[in-house]
Length: 295
Length: 274
Image 1 (cartoon, rainbow over the protein chains, first blue to last red):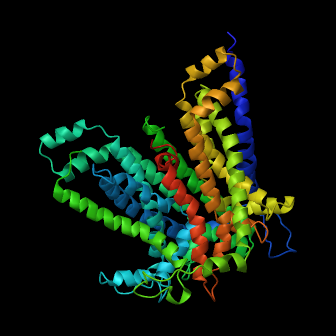
Image 2 (image 1 turned 120 degrees about the horizontal axis):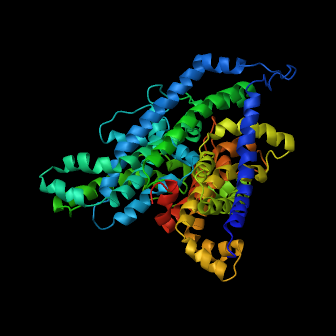
Image 3 (image 1 turned 90 degrees about the horizontal axis):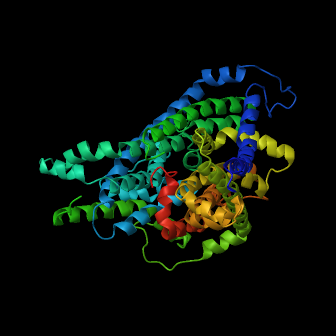
């Protein structure tokens, strides 16, 4: 037979070489380089200090600095705030758009738009809405009896201001994924449940939710990985302030590297963040492979 | 699900109306503010009827070479898309066709490359590009965006190639097609929707990206997102220009949503929802 499997496999492997080569040069190599930097004193602000090997000093400094631990807390707090609201709102909206009523297709499509917008633009339009004294958000809220909120200027509200912008952009993502899962559910358990005289809420809680749980878990991990990397919206809205109330991990790395020019410390902090993201990614893949239908 | 009663129907539409207002108002604000005269920009109640002005757009393109920045964004986005589609779909095809138990690990490894925080590698990139003289060039951004776009394309295309039956390729082989020829003439056309959705995601990601563009470009290769941000400074925020620039940046995304929404779901969830 002319169709030799062995030869094919070699050609297929050849197909993979360019992509793997590019990814190696553009991801693995910079990471190795960052690893190298993280063990050096690489201080661009002090030109005449030699860039020497300093062992674990940068890591010790990062892990023991209260500023770093603070940014880590803020990052996880923001993650918790956005994920919980996105999950509840997203599932609720999915239940609405999966009703068998006319017009649902166009509504679903329109709700995809926020996700396609650049996070910087999302930040800018929310800055416009939050803007002290002038912004429209407080004006709209005054109709429902909410007194003016100093969104981005108060330590109490700044983190929520960021969370709301992220929730606005990504709740449709949870909605969309959940809606797709809902429409592919089998109908049988519903009929049984209804014959048994369960209320809508009981049916949702005991029949629907367990079935869409794997999808919800995957969606939440995807959101968690993104939430961990959040940067653009904060850069536009608060730049980490007021004070350091909204300074997330990405902001810390940026400041160390490009404001103080302490590349070694920045690289060490990057590696700590990489370790955390590796854990999240591994959990995400585990969640995928638990459900054979998804992987 | 059974058909909702009249009362339920009204409730569903009412709630959806609120949802739509919440999620679409910011987009309306970008569009309306971009043509609102500056004096009434923050007028309350918001002016719904006013004579639109093109001043902000004119200023946007005459104050700064915004057309060139859009050009830069286009070069980077199209370049990275072409690069990623070529390499990504070849790798995806191999992963889809090689039957080996380690292939799943390779696929996961490639996908995981997409998830790393950009900020963690921006320092080494800065130093490397500075050394080789690529700082502030479109090529630098094309290379970096491909690290996100190649994994995405690989992962999405693998799903599409899996759906093309190998029997078709074997038939093509019998007809005298080589492996590459069968891939090009038989498999790829059948996976065309995958190419389209991958292209959309590569383009939108590169077009929207901000952090790398901000840190690795200066006046020469600046992209539109960075340029829009530069109208915002602590002493004067030029909202008209910001909104005009924002609307221009938002337009490709809106067009893609309206034209290929069917496939976007699959792309956004990395194929975990089909």
